[in-house]
Amino acid sequence: MTEKSTARVKQRKPGRPEGTSAVRDEIMDTAEAQFAELGYAGTKMREIAAATNVTQAMISYYFGSKYGLFEETFLRRGQVISKQRVDSLEALLDKGTPTVREIVHAFLSPTLALRATSQGRSFLRLQARLHTEPPEISYKLRTHAYGSSTQRYVEALRLALPGLGELDAYWRMTLMVGTYLYAFSDTHRMEEMTPKGLYDPEDTEALIDQVTRFVVGGFQAP
Image (tube, rainbow, N blue to C red; front, side, top):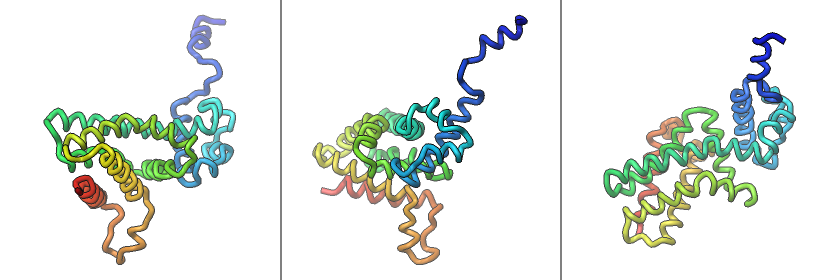
């Protein structure tokens, strides 16, 4: 064996196909859309494999199991959202006590940005669907992704609203999450309810303004 070929053997990682990052992302993109559409139970590994043009063995190699794929697919975006929320909140707190509107807007903005792409919209539907999945699937994953950042927002809201009790703060935080999940996840309810031409589903600014005003009103209610 020549010196060059020996070097190539040393550099190659045994058992790992070429283009690892790209293949993993393609698998997760497909899984994201199917989990969002069909739910955890309704999604089949063989269908993800066929749609991605890989083998089920390769999916198992990368993710270990169906739940491993679901977990990594969700956390891929969920953890980014959580970090963006914390960074935005910290920036507000560095300037003093933020208003309720500023806090709500900082919480909503990272998720809203996902509506700009079809893949991002798949994640929004997946995120909404997670709340209907069995507890053994949803609770741990939701806490892992959003637990600490949500806690920081509860604390910030009580700082901005000194008269807001602890239980009320958690209730209203939960109701804000439910509101934005429904509003952002393409249920098409507004298209069904409103007269033709009155509502523009692509008007992101109007969407966040409506949700923000509604949620701020709820937080500031007696």
